[in-house]
Image (cartoon, rainbow, N blue to C red; front, side, top):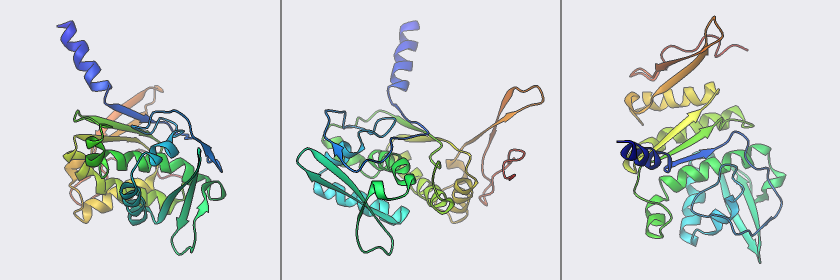
Length: 236
């Protein structure tokens, strides 16, 4: 029995990927390193190498998916063993080095690319042996850090879009957030019929009068409104 339980837990946790709240800062140039390229690491330090491992078609698809969902394009330039990540925002005529852009880009890109790799980019990568068919879970801590509220909202809309894809690929996303914009975006997606209210589960963490943390399960109603908002969640 213990052996079976041990095997079950190993199978469960081997499929969990984690992205921390503070990802690696942007650099003007990234030097090639012999790092794992099958997935983005928890700080996003291997992000340029992961993107470089994609073929030209997948890089183009990734940039288009980012543009469609977040309003900016991504480009990777290579020169020998050095990489340069570039961003082009909507209505901008050219790409700029990521180190010259807002800090938020370096923080959200590892999250965006990780989600894309597990959903939109999953099928071609499985043919290359980078992913397996086991159930996988991506845990993201505070993806909204350093993001403009408008981009937080767009991130919430994008999360809603990939929920159905994630289900098809046996992939789950767990997000720890304090962003009302993200919550509102997911609710709006339910109202528009992009996803069902049953596709999303909400766990609310609140301190009680004894200073102990209580966990309450909640969710959205069929009109996309979050039930049981935490006390003071929207307070200034």
